[in-house]
Amino acid sequence: MSAHVKARGEFLWFFQRVTALLLVYFLGMHIVILHFIRKGTITFASVAEKFAANPVFYKVFYFIFIPALLFHAFNGAWSVFVDYNPPEKARKITGAVFWVIGISLTVLGIIAVNSLLGGVK
Amino acid sequence: MEKTFRILRYDPEKDQEAHFQDYKVPYEKGLTVLEGLYYILENLDATLAFRSSCRAAICGSCAMHINGQYRLACRTQVSALNSDLITVRPLSHLTILKDLVVDLKPFFDNYKKIEPYLQPEKAEPAKEFTQSEKERGKIDKLVDCILCAACYGSCPVASTNPKYLGPQALVAALRFINDSRDGKTQERLAIVANDEGIFRCHTIFNCQQVCPKDIDPTNAILKLRGKSFMSKLTGKI
Amino acid sequence: MRKKNQLVKLYDDFTLNFNTGTIAWLLHRVTGVLLLVYFLMHAFVIGSAVHGHVNFDTALAKVQTPFFHILEIGLIGVIFFHLINGVRLLIIDLTGLSKAHKVLFWIFMAALVVFMAYTARMILTNVLSEAGGSLK
Ligand code: SF4
Ligand code: FES
Image (cartoon, rainbow over all chains, first blue to last red; front, side):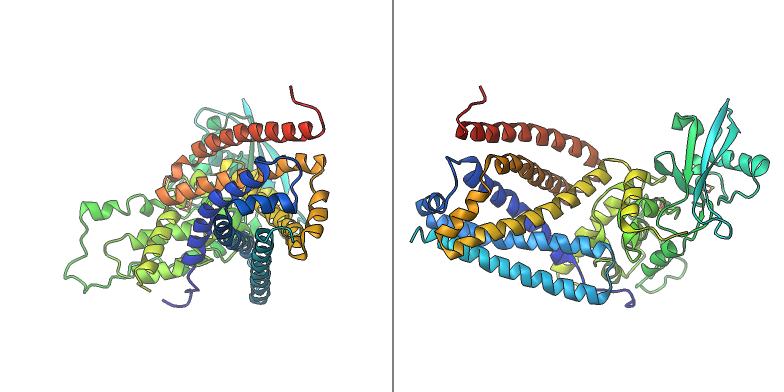
């Protein structure tokens, strides 16, 4: 019974759903905080001011939000990609590219949030 | 009264492309789409090719796309379609051999992958394996599958990924997993719990929509996901 | 017969199985891809914060014209569809209520319409008041 057994997919499937639930909260809050409650133009100073009111909350918030979003986005894209039954080589390359972009954007996002938390210098 | 049957014709030896051809079929109460096709074959055009056998929704030979949905031609009353135009196409995702006849090999290859036969673990009893009413109840709906491939033809994932097991094979996998006589549950889960099995499904529900036996393959896939996740969590394989 | 390309296949599958499940799936996919593309642009703009507030403010000023604010209505619509359809699939995944998918689809689409009416009103009010006008 082994000819057709492939790598199991439970965890990717499960985390896609876990991150989906996380995003309902985090993305919802993100839009409400930064776009709905908006007075005038958003600037570095206006965001920094919001963040300064509750730095720990915003730090934790974005440290969970950003990785969850990137996982959900690239795992979703991967799922679309695999639907087209790509050859093994294309899978390897695309998988590696997704990981590299995903991780670098996570790092970039966290640095950006950190500099916003630092306020206008 | 007459009905127009618009049928997708394709003869690989003559035609470059598939094309529609119209036939006028006299209507009388109780006419099924399959009878309409037989009328055409016997009276209008002997070159028309289609599959059928039981004429009673048992054999699963006559699944085709009829007016907006995949159906069994033998079980579809022309009157129920509420239209004077009956458009008939073969099943999708499979190579057309001639007219409405398609090559079902990829469909059956996927079916074979899930090893569709009982594999008992317990020692063979002297007479036979018995099942309680409750045990049998667990496979009631699932054993009704007639392998008509309507679900396979309706699935957009099967369209682009021929390696995807497809709704029917996954229904069959659950049928053996749920069977009290079968002992290979974990091995069967391992066959389906990957990105060419239950995790390739995007819950589009077309298979539920078209299944002539009302089996709800989407639900079978959801159940398999729950089972495989539990087996992964508890460390069985 | 010629081999069909992927777009023709998609069109065929869509028209031959025209029901809520197919529509929801295609929209979920299209919105998902749109959001990924949007997110990459978003990261590009917000990422400029690492170069200090001057770069950030010039980048952000470019995307805060009335035109972009009105586009945001579309963006929130795309997000909300993807979100609410995802919740629908999650509910079905967890409860196994696969037969309820059509009812849930229409309920959620009604919620989408209500939510979008509210969002559009609010964003238009903001844009107008910034331009010195008002909705009333
Ligand atoms: S699950 Fe239903 S639609 Fe699919 S092959 Fe079996 S009977 Fe046909
Ligand atoms: S002819 Fe047997 S199922 Fe229709």
